[in-house]
Length: 146
Image (cartoon, rainbow, N blue to C red):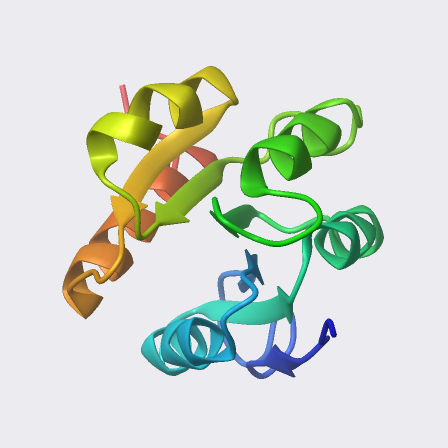
């Protein structure tokens, strides 16, 4: 069964910068809760889906700034979900971070072939996920002075 939850204070909340929306698509509710907890104090709104179909629907509706996508999910895996997201003109440039519990040598090349901006193996250190999100979103949020 899929879920739709949101954490965060909403776009713009008293922050001078607009909050970024991150969509987490993972069939493991523990992983979703962990990511929500890690990002709760940050400048992100987190929405989630428990399967690829719900993830695609939420991505179309909410147009997230970043998608964190589990590779191994029932019915539609992360690769198929990413391929479907990439066919949407509104979503084709949204960065995707793939998560997997499998061995990197099995998935890393395949993840990049399916449009990954980054790839992270589970379990991951919390700070590593935060840093990775910052690196992926920084080109989209900050312009470098010349």
